Length: 167
Length: 167
DNA sequence: GCTTGACATGTAAGAAATGACATGTAACTT
DNA sequence: AAGTTACATGTCATTTCTTACATGTCAAGC
Image: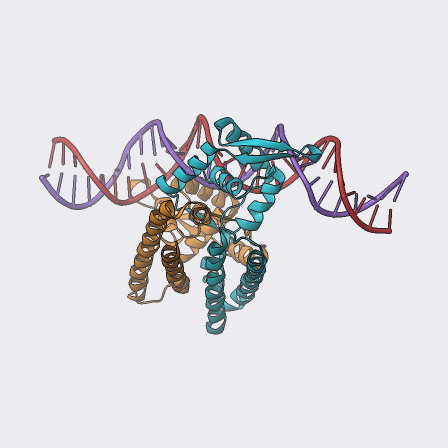
């Protein structure tokens, strides 16, 4: 159950409300997983039931701040170190890249250009995020993952450029 | 609906039975999408209903060979060129990589090593597939996508090596 | 002749995910 | 004072996916 552990992970980085976690999911995990609030709220309730997370404070507008428990931290550790990863991937963009080779070049070209523009835009946003993180007093634990993403982007963009030249 | 179009795409490459398509899904699209036969058989029936695919021959053991229709090819083209890609990605491995930064180095190390080994094994298999494809009389349309994957692998492996050195 | 494994197709229950519906509060702007 | 936007939490119907159940054929090896 990746949603459960992703949530446990985000809560380990920092406690937060369901609303906030929904946003953090999109900002930091968007290249790995997606979950909307309609999944997150019920899952927080289940984490509570399992003893892996708990409400630590209630604030304005009925907001409830959740934090991971010791049991939750241990469950996350167990999951990361002991369970076999589920390797199955879902990436529509990659499906499209694969199927694109079936189109004739005239149809393929604009799609490839759009994809390259998208990759480049993502790269710009990642660079901005990296700069933001580097300006913080303490370094973010997940900073190296941003570096990985920053390296993968140009490789994809370059491949697309070559495809556009060859096509 | 990615399953539908992935299937349409595989049928465009080559007609095939549901059984065969299940295998091809795993072999050629495993880094992009996964579907098991229990999803594929019903979807083929739906593609038939929609006029996008049809049974072109029946063989031994009740096997039925499906092929894409002209309408199906057009639907695939329309989907690739006109519809907005769904950018949401599901990749448990990437989630794990992200969350790994939360563990202490002693726990992190063996997981990183396992991941690197996995990446390298995938790379070996991709190289073998590439060699296989290059030995064929006509070049495979999707050959360039293999090249992209072959470039991404080493970047990930190197990042992991660095993480192991730094940790 | 028998067994095993690959080929081959289906269904069905349950879990997970999506997208829409529904409601209300607090802060800021005009 | 009214309007807008961001904050905040939930539910529910539908769709999609997974896992298990269920059945049968054909080829190869023993």
